[in-house]
Image: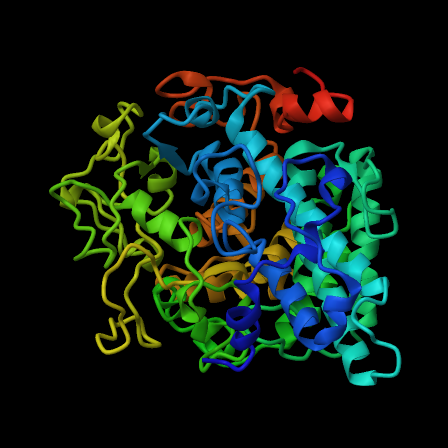
Length: 557
């Protein structure tokens, strides 16, 4: 594996009390509080502790806990359910037209799936807690660097590395804030400039947006003009800029001020940094291979086309979690005649608890026999396998099969053309080896195209070329100029990014989430969907947060 893995494996799995010792009060979320390390302890090996500190920042978004066991947020019995990608998936995917969760033993899932949103929902509180524990972790790491604990003075190499790590921590913090501002609107904001233990201030969505974006823009500028390849599992200027394109694309919705031109310009810079792969677009030749057991090869320093700009590592560096790809594969696989957890998924876990909603399935144009020409749905289990497309029920195991099984990630390794590589495929176990792609180049192409279609930024011909790279790889017909509509880009975006924690934010941006402009199965609690109140474009700030922070609740709750 890559040399940087030694930082994760050698340092990240140990308890690093310095990061969390005094950050509980920062955001008032229930974070574990290990014993703090003393300055004398840091002085014994500052380089090792510096590496360990940044590794824990990244483990905060990759596993249940930076310390390798249990969860770093208290009060939730299922540590796997509290991982970053999984709590975001619940908010961004489960509450939309993409997926239905069938097991409601955990309080809050049924209400989320039916878009019956309320402040006391435990799933929302879990999401909020995870996001803000990451923010607290990043702030405390930056404070620790700034405190002089790592003995940077007089050691130029260590000081440069620490400065780079601080930039990376700010990008990770920006990612957590991105999902917080999308879901909750007027959020609490705090950064490293406030002393540990300071209570965060609730800001308007616009003000929070401006502070977060300003921080990321400063970080990008500090990295210099050029993109350099970061170590595997870490981030650099390109990931920072890709995250900024998300903020710019949502700026009109979140602040009232459009930033489509800025989105287009930054997307152009990122796109220009990539080549090779499908028609020299920088996209991998195979969509399927991007979600297989060896997909780390498509990330930074990988052996193949680096389409994955930001990856959350898994088994490739011995990080295991019941979030990320393990969660997705196990949820879609189940005890059912038409699917095999081993044969189809190469995973011993089979949870039988998640199916596609009919509206997602229909985007891929399956024929009556359950076949689609779209390679992005190549692995799905459909009517050809005994599944039905409509969701007649969403309750319990009886709901499995009532909706197609949308296989996307698997625990098989693939060659660059999407053929199974038997030699590289791991033995089936409880944990999947596939990384979780946080941002892919394909999303940047889509962000640019949407900025053109919705905001008039850039060149229509260039945007059309971007879309047709994506559609061409998927094996479907190219678009013409007449196809460049808001509805079409929203649908194409979902065909490409389904399951990648984008859908709710995109629906809100297009005016298709709350209200009755667009209905999907079980929206509002009825089989074929019903209108929901417009205020549900924002989630409620959880009751427990309101109780200790005294924040103003979002309207309508």
